[in-house]
Image (tube, rainbow, N blue to C red; front, side):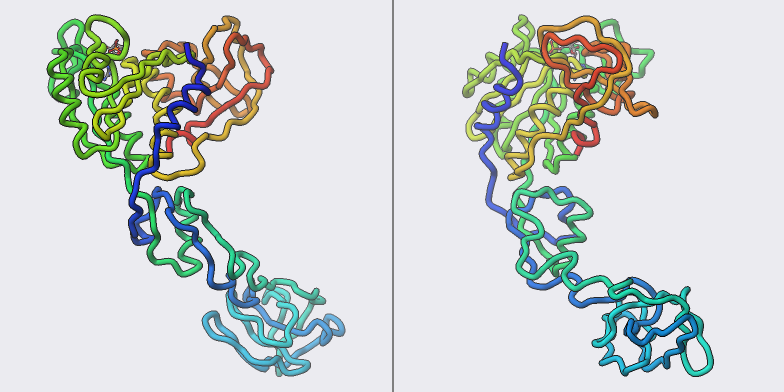
Length: 401
Ligand code: AMP
Ligand code: MG
């Protein structure tokens, strides 16, 4: 059996980033991977400005709580003022540039409008309520690097330095199919009319959604029967116009598992037994120019191997530089007494005490565990866990995007 880390290194070596880059509207770029550095031509903010509605003053003009300053100018956001006359204040609003000469803003709650001006009740401190020029971004800085995955905050940041279009890596085009004669599509047969042995195709639903969350363009080829000729036919068609063919099921080496001979008939295949639980069988191959990845059929195995192996593979194809999710040390609030010789990815849930609870059925067929859980506990091979032990937790939120 191959350790996961080794499988990852080998798999990543096959993932050559796709090209060419394309230009998209920043509005449409959520989830895409930047194919350029975004360099700022300006300081953000471009001027020292007020972070409050109030009065811009010179601190030296304040004598005591009775100080009254004449209001010599008014600066709403979007306009700019001029040199602040001595012993005067500028009425100023949030975001408006600080006029030359002023060195503090007094919030309006600390002032009182009086006959002939404004009374400044509290002593202003130099710099107070002023947002400094360039405190967010300085001119010449790269705010986002090529390889960064864009998210809502980064789209805002790109816009804040004037980018209406960004260069992004192309979306991976993925053909998806499930194998298994037992599979039935929900909607085709009502639950109470399912024949013995038939099961609904659940993998197809979460795999399509997982791919789409990564920004892939998915061609859903449905269910392919457990026959060699049908599997070859499906793979041959899918190898055209796709960067990756992803399948679930049929990668064990049983008589009904036709993925291995079918891929071998058309291209090359590496069948790996990866030392993880759930998971284990995993296939990587190449058919024409298309990559091939075969996931195990058991739903939780399929789900977890996608997150651990397919996700970083696709991210790298799409040019992303950050491939591994963050894992954090957290206390386990349970005992796990049976060490496994494989590295385990247990479905666990965050509890309000700041620890992790374990789903009681960790079978690779129990998809409920993945819905109940908040993430995976990454348990090293051969390791038992005692209540209170620090364990490594990977949140689904870090894996499902
Ligand atoms: P396989 O890897 O084809 O031997 O399948 C392993 C187990 O996963 C079997 O119990 C299958 O019925 C089940 N399975 C395979 N494909 C799917 C699917 N698309 N949805 C739900 N269960 C599946
Ligand atoms: Mg099967």
